[in-house]
View: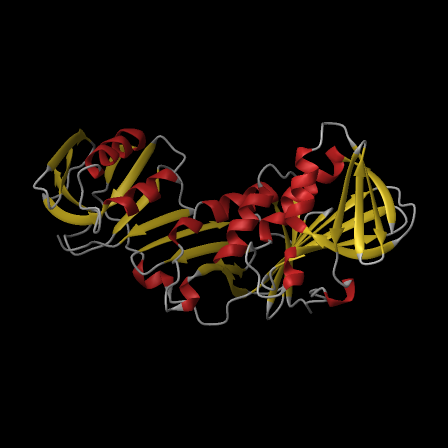
Length: 366
């Protein structure tokens, strides 16, 4: 294998695929990238056995072939070379030679045939969706995923295709986020899958700034997303996701209407003196007023009061202030609606005029 390539061509591709390469690998080959050079293209593949990223670059190839090369070392070399450098990469037996100007690097390699690849995934459903819409769906729900929960099916995000609607749901048992869109088209059947946490994080990263449509293929064990020159594949989490409809409160006639930024800032200030372990905040609802009270074991207290639109009964209820702030941070509108039916009910948070995204925070005892 032998080819020349400009640093500015190779660097963005290396930055994308290195996202899935773990620093500590059980298999040495997983620290490497697979490079496949064909007549007019170069393909880079990285995997951690759960998520696979493949990027294709159009480039003239002097001599075709395939090899594996240490992922982070190649990225660091490429990153630190001067701008507009031209790199020559060629295989020399069990080594790879990378030269650029007067710089010369000899890297070790491992057998390309040992590199684990995800082949055909036997799709059972497929659809297309604008990249911006898919990223927005994931971005507004991913914060509610669990981290290392024994209920393994919560350590990911539910993606549900139903009658042309694509729905994303995440919950950690204390809060829930649901967003949906009717933008999924060419859909071929209803489907429910759970995407692992790392895969969701990677997807949000690679979809950032992408234009056009994403082609989505779903099988029993995998999801594959094709962006043209970039292909993303992830294993799925097996298991049954809980019935999320049961925990979403109904809207009532007396929601709290608040300025999102004013409420967010008030809760942020109150959170400074909350208990670091439990992060509790006491919310007191009165006519056209919300009070947020916090205290900690050092006997320190904070009180915030803001004006809102509210004509319901007076009420006092406890929440994890971090959960409320996380929910407010994904809302894009100026006004936010909070529905709380009674002191034992969950809080339903909606963006003003947006019925496609529902955020739920369960109460806590203080």
